[in-house]
Amino acid sequence: MNYHRYYPVDVVNGEGTRCTLFVAGCVHQCRGCYNKSTWPIDSGFPFTQELEDRIIMDLQDTEIKRQGLSLSGGDPLHPNNVPAILKLVKRVKTECDNKDIWLWTGYKLNELTAKQQAVVPYIDVLIDGKFIQELADAKLVWRGSSNQIIHRFRLHN
Ligand code: SF4
Image (cartoon, rainbow, N blue to C red; front, side, top):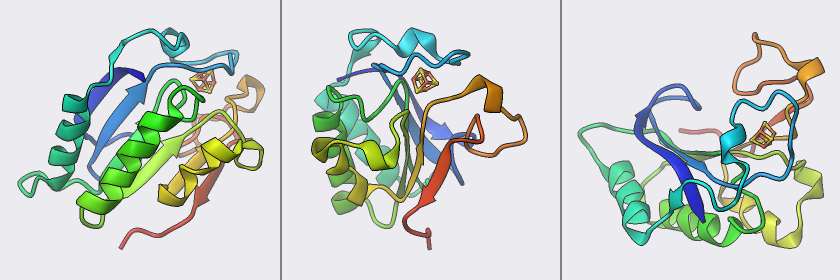
């Protein structure tokens, strides 16, 4: 997997203070996409073991307390990204106490393949669906267009 940006302290991509990772690779080609540079699967930089370890350490940090991890892109559920994302979310849920995981994907939840679905049990909040420019609304929170659905699988406590 490649990634474009990692923000160790982020307050705009999900609730609370978070770590946020923007991965490379997206097949959806939404008109009006805000992040076209992330489309090629080989764009950006390699997501290394060091960066994975860094994210876990940042989430364990007690000086700057983060509510959780946000995964965006690009598309974290691009088939090429699924193995690395699955490894990362499993580590977060086993090594980081009470952290939530938010994930944005252009796929619809009910259209995920079995391999993509394997990530879902580790996700607390999943925002799905392509960005549709005709349905865009700046007043929407955590999503760009009204067709996208915020699935809250678990409430953070
Ligand atoms: S799913 Fe997101 S990153 Fe992919 S083309 Fe659509 S808006 Fe852009």
